[in-house]
Image (cartoon, rainbow, N blue to C red; front, side, top):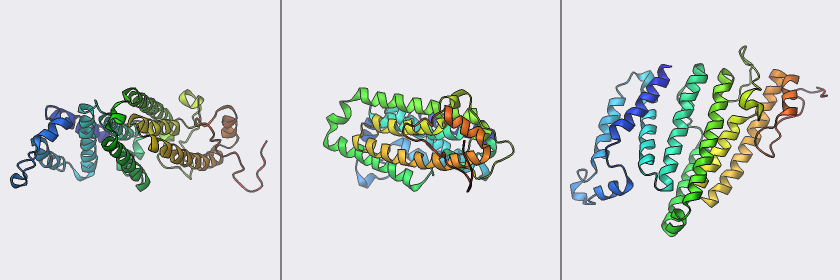
Length: 288
């Protein structure tokens, strides 16, 4: 729980310290004099103070330093997004920061023995990072070429925000309810405490955490009004979760046998068109 407390304290500290600073995009832009002869004095005060604040975070014990630093950065990103929430990208930054911080906190609350820096998911994979960069490029290129397109669909952005929040709710409920049975990595060995959870949100679908992330992924692109990335994210995310569910259900059948097969017959995966694994887990196994 100490890691969770440090992450929350660091993120709240970032918001509290920087809330009164001019972090709105218009304020930051107007703060620059663009006089290179005055650099770095021409930089706005908030940016000049960042090295000092982040240096204080590095004074944490080495075992907590990375957690504090990451949570602080996510809190600061959340604040920047919140103060610029009148534009789609500001809303997106808020949603993005909250997603990664809440992943760490929820893991710490539900499955503390598996809590680590990886629980933030900020280092999920290079593909994940590339997908984000591509979505940013589409947003800003379209904003440059067709500014009225980005700002003319406010209702679409709020619909995307709603989808992201719904995805967050479903995923975090699934993580909390699964408890120690939840892990960001597919497990190949059954631990003694592993149990098959089929009640609550798991009575509605077999993989609510994946459904939540799938909705969040699509919602982020609706929020940004990114038509191209919405299609790309949909196709890539669908393929990712199709393979992931197939592999995970292979291990779940190996762990729980007929108990999981019966669960499959009465409950869908949660993502339309994805059936999961229904074959034998060993050569010669017979199915009813």
